[in-house]
Structures are given as C-alpha cells and as structure tokens.
Length: 121
Image (cartoon, rainbow, N blue to C red; front, side):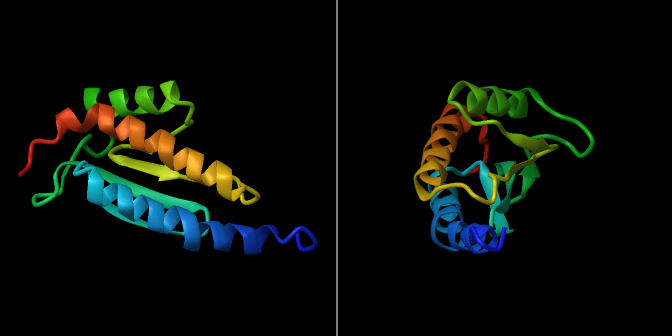
C-alpha cells in the first residue's frame, strides 16, 4: 500500500474529485440534503425536503423512492451502498481520477431520474 501510494490516492481523490463533485451535485439535485465525508468515504442524506430535512426513507426502513434511486444507480452502472435515507459513496482506495468522475456522472443521471420525489420548495 505504501509503495503504491494508495492512502495518498484516496485522500487526493476525495479532496479534488469526490468532495467537490458531490457538493456540485447537491447544488443541482435538491434531493441531496447533506454531503459529508473524507477520502473515498462519503455519505449523502437523501431527502424529500431540504428545509425540514424529511428523509426519503424512514429510519430502519426503505421507501419506494429510495428503491427507485438504488435501481437507477444500478441501471447507470453504479453499485450503491444505501442505508435508510443515506447513500454512501465508497469507491476503492486505488480508484483513478477518470473512474471517480465517471461514478459522479452515473450518480448524476440516477439523481435526475428520482428528482420527482422532492416535495420541498
């Protein structure tokens, strides 16, 4: 790991591609209520209303809208890691910049497909 700079790559990808890219997606897609993370471990809160922070799926369960998001991710080639109303973005530590950008594009398409579930202003 040390010789290949895997930890450094994970930090670089998070700082330069995933973090900025996910924050840009949050500006574009109102269903993203919050973005947080570091390196190659990021979490998105998926909501129906940003102001109330009403989750897209209740704690301990799923919802048709979250199931639709998961299906849209898979359809677009992205394997999601969902947990109730959160979607975790956890690519491998050795991901390339090109693949990280491609993953963001896939997520963008999936979020566009489920935008109709946003009920807030």
